[in-house]
Image (cartoon, rainbow, N blue to C red; front, side, top):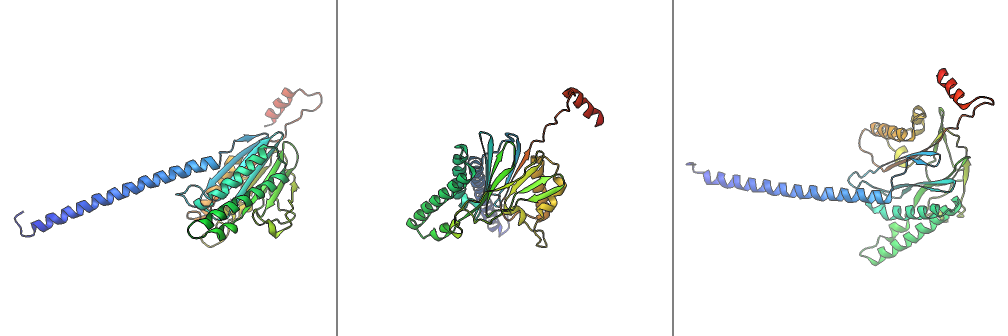
Length: 313
């Protein structure tokens, strides 16, 4: 304390301490703001993307969503399932862009699908109503962009949504309309079949590129098999060398898994394959049709048949 530079040292220590306290206060405030933003994003995700039930009619269901923007917790991918009467309808889509900017489009498409499917609309009408609702939303957003500062109407007018819409009866083939989306994959035994559309159709929002006709394809969906719907965030994931993720090839090793186990296995393998954080949103929906019930032979009591199977096992 008796040195000549003691006052300088004391002032320096005071300034450093004050700066440290101020920096800590700023950091804590930003952490609170980030936690609040994440909470809002999680609530938004739960409102828009309702958790899918594990069982819908005769189908076991599992879904997975992973946003590329981890802080936003939601992006431009979407999915929904609706059950009406003896049929189940499924939607999986991908809005142009990602992050919070695509939320309005996601909300529009989901609300239109739920309203149409729950009202009992057949598959072609559901697709038409999705397109009409999307165009109305684009017009509203263009009007809002033109009236505000700057103009984002050009981006809005060029917006589109790739989607695949399925209609699943309780028994029989699946009917599907593919609107510029990656084809669903059918897992049966050790085979993986891509359900490619017979006629390519542009995404929602780009119907003027075709005659506007709704193309509905049909494919077998045997009991015990699984359908996997996914967005391009899965197949366009690259490894460090730049090679795309071989989804169909990898699925052969997981054909016997339940839907929940299947989507978990793909997600883990995808992260390991990428070697870093994902660069695009990822969404998947897996549906498994219940295996066919064993029909007892004539003259055999069901209990005897079960006991015979148990002895054979």
